[in-house]
Amino acid sequence: MAGTVEQKLAEQGIVLHEAPAPVANYVPFVRTGNLIFVSGQVCFDPQGKLIAKGKLGAGVTIEQGAAAARGCAVNLLAQVKAALGDLDKVVRVVRLGGFINSAPDFVDGPKVLNGASDLMVAAFGDKGRHARTTVGVASLPADAAVEVEGVFEVA
Image (spheres, rainbow, N blue to C red):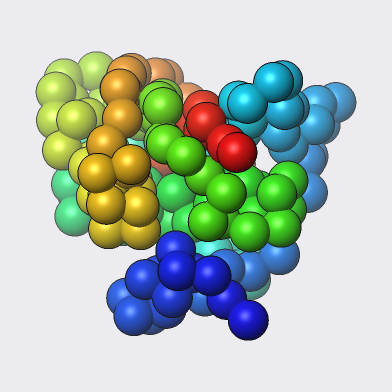
């Protein structure tokens, strides 16, 4: 039976899929003490297709980027569920770090990353409010539009 957090996600039409496997020499998450650090998740959908490909400000809109960031957040939560077995064990979303594949003059990265931040707050309520960094980058793996990493405090 799904926990409270997964029920909130389901109400928004989100069912967590199997956590994506690493594509290089790293692990998807590391737990140390009461923190889980989740490796950057690109914006793959459950079928392994990019939600948005290319650069923000050069073909990818803010709305498409925000949807991609939301997809990254879903992948983060899939990793946390793989680590814990139950998202209700999350005490707090501590931090998100967002990487936006950006044209040189694109300055709206924070608007893009809101797609991930909004999902965390919708899933966890006040426990989903977090510190955050948004960085525009020249490229991302597979030409993904967005990648997001996260730190979670857990019970």
